Structure formats: structure tokens, C-alpha cells
Length: 62
Image 1 (cartoon, rainbow, N blue to C red):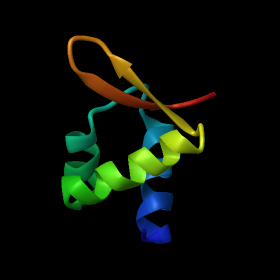
Image 2 (cartoon, helix red, strand yellow):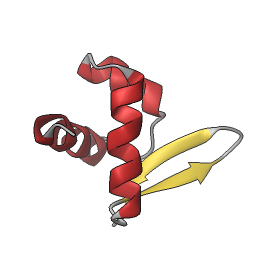
Image 3 (spheres, rainbow, N blue to C red):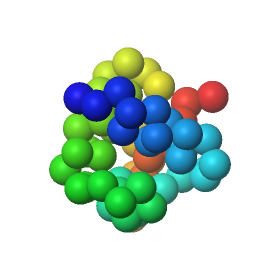
Image 4 (cartoon, rainbow, N blue to C red):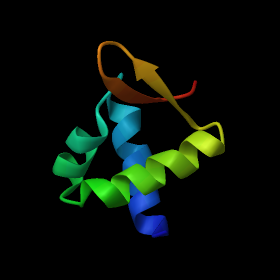
């Protein structure tokens, strides 16, 4: 997994409250599948959490 993409995803999440993976991908100009992989890794490490509010959102754990 690209450390650059990982850093960019974390930086983006620091700017928003909650966001969908597809919106992260669009904002960063990356494929959603790549962003999903990064988000899953960050979730395993306890750095992000998934919120289910009618649909799935991602946010940084604070």
C-alpha cells in the first residue's frame, strides 16, 4: 500500500467530520478500491472508524 496515499487519506480526514470513501477517492483523484484498502488498514490499526448512518461513513478516531 502506498504510504503517500495513506498520508493523503489521513490528511483529508483531518479536514472533515465524516466522509464516504468514494468522496475521499474523488477529492484525491484516486481509485475508490485503493482508498478502500487504505481505509481498511487504518481501521484495523484503530485510526479510523466506520459510522453507519443510513450509509457508511469514515472518520478519524480522536
